[in-house]
Image (tube, rainbow, N blue to C red):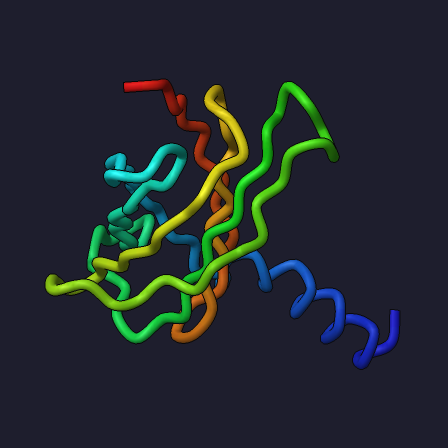
Length: 121
């Protein structure tokens, strides 16, 4: 194997080790409007637990039980008051289980999917 091929292979194998994964907690509270929720999102480094600040976070949703039928266009989250905290308002199409897709860009890049149950009050 030539040196250049060996170098490329080593970089390709090491790439996952350098990837930074994030973890997230999301809590959505109903507003006074039906099917509209204010969501608080906490994003942290998966390994260290340190809050991720300065990221661009968007939140979209789809209904796993009805693929392609019910989807919520992603909305941009705003930075919250605490480090690693972000806030977004989502409007769903109906009650039930939704898969919220968090896209994180900035100092780290990752996509996290969290399933939440939304019920009538």
